[in-house]
Amino acid sequence: MTVFTLVERKVFYPSPGRGIMAGATSFYTRCNRPEKMCYLSTSSRSDTTDSLSRRFSTDNGRTWSQPEQVPVVVRCREGFRRSYPHPGFLDPDRDLLLTMVMRGTLPTDDPLEGLRGWHLAYSLSEDGGRTYAFEEQVVQDGSTAENPVEGVWVGRNAMMIGDMSCRPIKNHRGEILVPVQICPLGDDGRIMNPAGGYTYHVSAVLIGRWTRGNRIAWEISETVSIDPSLSTRGVLEPTLAELPDGRVMMVMRGSNDVKPDLPGYKWISFSDDGGRTWSQPAPWTYEDGSRFYSPSSCSQLIRHSSGVYLWIGNICSRNPVGNWPSYPLVIGEVEPKGGHLVKGSVVVVDDRQPGEDEKMTLSNFMAHEDRETGEILLHLTRLFVRKHLDWEADAYLYRVAVQG
Image (tube, rainbow, N blue to C red; front, side):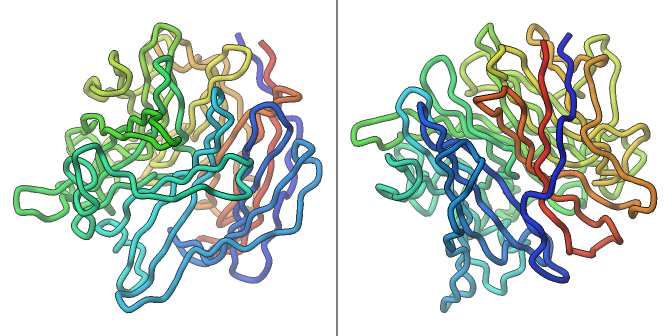
């Protein structure tokens, strides 16, 4: 059984001022060089980035260049045009950096307007993210910019990447799988919210295939949905891993928002055909079949270079109420035959400390493997530590050793 050990926790990017949340991510940008990029962000309210900058490293993150501003919002006649680049995905066979970009125009800059306005673009860099050859909208073959994939119409409902932990993967067929979430439309043409939660989503996978000129031809999988009597916000923020037998597993966030008597779980689904069709979601369990509680929060699957499958997320000792408690943050091994979480391997990475607010949050993170050490590098902002809705917070970097 794999053993995980927390090696270090340190501030990576301190809050730049009162009421400001600092955020950070980092990722590799070249296949055979120790080159990385990091994004530094600031926020002062939920689901909104106020500023974004990027830095580069040529020595595996030991030192970083000076920050360069990345524009994220422009005032326009229609309102506020926002563009959020997600952490890049490095194609291991092509040494090309793919960046998924979430774009949308919000009339009054209310984040919930994104449920109708968000759509996806992608950009490509051949020089480690310093320049980009192009940025163009994700449009399924045979579709249009207004109706980019089946079931999505820009301005009526959204397709988006749920969180930083929703990372693309490459399958054994050479296809790129991008986990996404969609706000489905009902028969009346309006966004569905059958259980009355904060939002309602279904999950899906964009399947990308390289074509001439380093463009990508896109298709969309069938959607993965759940009975709203089991999860009031549907299933969202999917994370993916391809198992040794070629199946793809998807772990999703659920919720018992507005119905706290429902059990709060993570939900799992499998695909036997490269991510195109999916099994009905079921509560994710330990290898002995027992269930565990998890709040409505993001999580991430990672395949380690040792061949071990890892999961990072929140597990709580009691039934959650919506998003809370969003602690502790844990890491554990995933058993690859059945896709279960190995109970005895689960280790706490961080937890609420004495004196910290009950609604402090250890979520909204992104992790990757350090090529030199094999450690898991985890970026996370410890939010609402002093009191709920106090946005002043530092971004931390955790190092977790992995020993098989």
